[in-house]
Image (cartoon, rainbow, N blue to C red; front, top):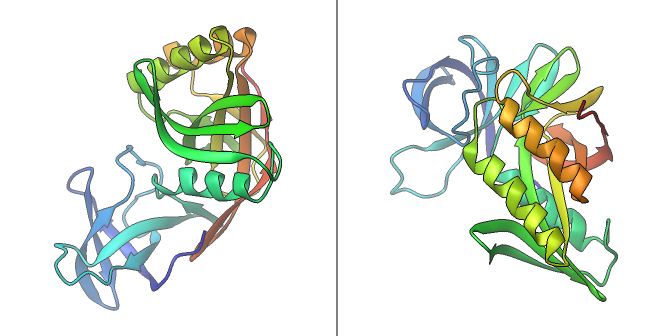
Length: 227
């Protein structure tokens, strides 16, 4: 996936989940943050950030904050992009073959799953989670408690019991990481649900991404440790 009209700036502050103040070309701008997570370790004053400029003249904000430099590491923090990246990757024939048909936002039970895939006789539900939390090469999810995430996991287990295949894909929005693990400290219930899901047959995958200031593409599988 490629962005257009990307500029860089210096992060100043984040008054709430939805907006940030960023210095762009010497002028402070109010920008939309495309991630409602905490991102406290990413959005620190003085951080180099990347923004996509909107063509919509009626918008309240001219820019979307999509990426940040954390030390030497470039991290995409657009929470809307992982679904698009995975959908594009699947349609290229990865994982389920070139004949796979992919649909977005399909309701099943009490959940709306990100993707539904049919490939031959296979019927598959997939939930996708973007990962931006990293420490010494280890990436974790979630960065804040997510009861919605727990609910999705148990709905995926129900899909298995009803005869479908189920996948939970963690899209690591950066390169060069060591492994993925659930964030036990932040949300032990999510971690426990993830272990239960694997035992019930849900496929737990993690892939890193090639990330540039104007591009993000799914790249290579990353080891997943649930214990």
